[in-house]
Length: 113
Image (cartoon, rainbow, N blue to C red; front, side, top):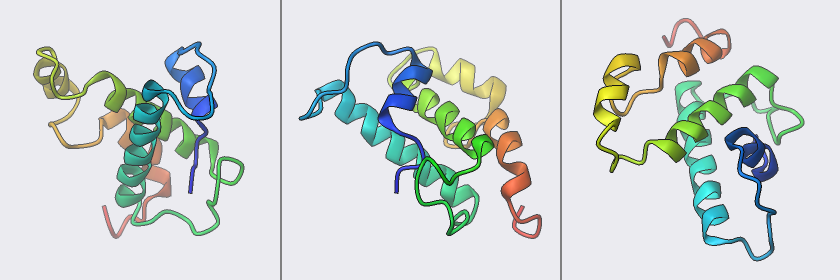
């Protein structure tokens, strides 16, 4: 399942290179992070909605959260000296940012929160 496309993600990150077939190393890494972000979001939402099958069926707010999470995984790879200082302000390492959590709040079952 791909709830955001590589093209959408590249636009969000302001990456101007064309997507090629086969994928470049940068595109492969970005695609990996897209899958990781999707897994994090769906885990937080306890699986999400079965009707979300691709980028055309997922709610725009969930798509926004996915793009924000991909951007965070893309920018803060864990080897950045500034990572610890930034994450302590918005969230603890390993947790979704408060921005992403607030975007997703309306899609999470309150009994699970």
